[in-house]
Length: 220
Image (cartoon, rainbow, N blue to C red):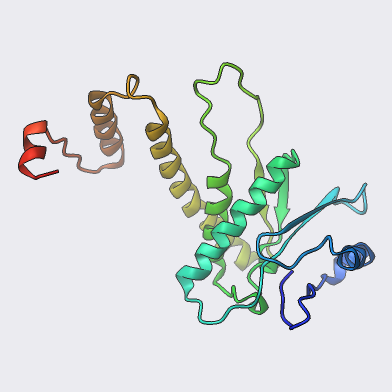
């Protein structure tokens, strides 16, 4: 949902195939449970209406002008993170996301399909990160799965490519997070250096490990 008018009422449209939900959505608007404010979420348990067990609405906030592409992508990353956190809180194992409803021009988030999918998936994936290596009691949970649904095959292919690129960013970022979360008695300078060289070798990159004397010379 997004705000388009001065009345600050949520504006939303429902695809013709999902008109079953119209009455429920109208009730949510009337009760003000469905908020248009940015990052607001409204999780609705449908009890088996059609094939969807639940619906999650996400507020996109006020229409903003002057947003460049990178700003729009960052906004979608934040929205993706918000969706992931709400689904985790509601203990949902998976979700179908109609990403096209996020990138409508009315919300000031018009982006090409690949960039939109990459940004949303990055925010979603990074928000799911946990470091529980040293927890005495670990909660055994399956990874939260998200599926980006498109209206046509061409856009679906672009969504898939965007997710592929996002997964590379997520994996690299979470690997760096894992290293940063290791205690110093476990991740010694030597182990960090050896790990860096190993990763660089696997990816065909060059890795230069500087000794203390060289670091001082470079005033680092």
